[in-house]
Amino acid sequence: MKVGVVGLGYVGLSIAIVFAEQGNTVIGVEVDGEKIEKLRKGIPTMFEPGIKEHLEKALPNLHISSDYSSLSETKFIYVAVPTPTVDGRIDLSHVEQAAISIKAACPQSVIVIKSTVVPGTAKKISRLTGMDVVSNPEFTREGHAIEDTLHPDRIILGAERQELMDELEALLGFSGAPILKASNEDAELIKYASNAYLATKISYANELAKLCEKVGCDIEVVTLGMGLDKRIGPQFLKPGPGWGGSCFPKDTQALVAFAGDNSSRLKIVEAAIDVNNQMVQHAITLIKEIAGGNLSEKRIGVLGIAFKEDTDDTRSSKSIELIERLFREERAQVNVYDPVAKYSGNCTKYESLSECVANSDIVVVATEWDGFRSALREVEKPILDLRRILDLKEYPGIYAIGLGRKGTGGSPMHSKVTS
Ligand SMILES: NC(=O)c1ccc[n+]([C@@H]2O[C@H](COP(=O)([O-])OP(=O)(O)OC[C@H]3O[C@@H](n4cnc5c(N)ncnc54)[C@H](O)[C@@H]3O)[C@@H](O)[C@H]2O)c1
Image (cartoon, rainbow, N blue to C red; front, side, top):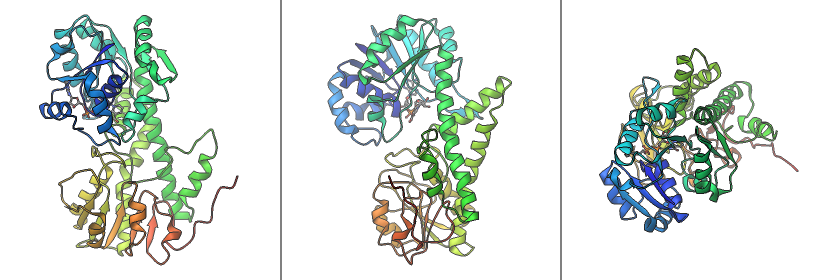
């Protein structure tokens, strides 16, 4: 099949690569000239494990251009452009702009919206262009983008015409994932409802983590016990400095605003956002406890800049909020290290973790990168483990504290699961 993909960012590039690898002819349209040049040469424009090899394999079937007319005679054109929030509401201007350009170049095609959009958007785009519009929201995780695109848990399709969803099923059938065919609006809301639920689960764990610190419980043990219940499950119960990234913060905000615009309130999602907004302040309080008060002129080494491991994406990263607040509000000197993410704010960036740690008085684990755990084993500095990656019994005598746990290192974690 010949397929179009408009917008070759984290989502668009991943689906374009996977469609091309499946033997489809893929036309990718992108407005960023630098991205186009790099991708044509097989140079990945984002960090994703294995992406270079996948891109090389896909390139013979993947044609990249800035010209929408290259999409002519393409039946399905995916739109994977940004949908940021502006003043707390979704901004659909990129989607609208892409749709107008598609209409001008190939009005007979069908627009498939991959971008995360509020219910009613597909109908709006259909009215704007007079074209058929299918909803096919994306659930991929950065750091697993190719793998998740190849093997999603489920595929959600929404359309007015059943036969369009049946045709798309043939394109997407390679994954073997269950497909739910629904209305455009249901498909659009499923995406938001899922993201808000996952964000809420993390906020719940974070709120419990703060209680654990007060009453002498350990959040890691508590969530381990909770997660063994199949009705709850272990995923997204890990505490941390709060959720960030390009999806949860903007999607929860957009959903709350959308509910408000429709005379509804999602109080649970509002509370999850509120809890999330307090987590960096909580981290600063813990760092101050370690420092014995004032952080002025203390050297704080923040490990991890990206919003999570295995990605270079720093959008709405809690780590960056922490770095900036330590510098601006606490007048600390901030050192940072991340294996792939870049940041040039108010901090000193180190190329090696050991150098960053050596030049810091207190070390903060802000991102769960593989490798941090073993690298920190030899470190004899106070550590605040915001991601709970360290087994604190391995740090006898070192002042290491974990989020959601009272006290310092040295006391063995005595809870384990036996089968
Ligand atoms: N990043 C994720 O993990 C993820 C997961 C699920 C859903 N989503 C959703 O997918 C959408 C895209 O997210 P992303 O992270 O891939 O964004 P991104 O910013 O990484 O990529 C978007 C790309 O679209 C290009 N673009 C913008 N306007 C264009 C236009 N008119 N024509 C052609 N190209 C255009 C940009 O240059 C950019 O390369 C958003 O709605 C997001 O909420 C993202």
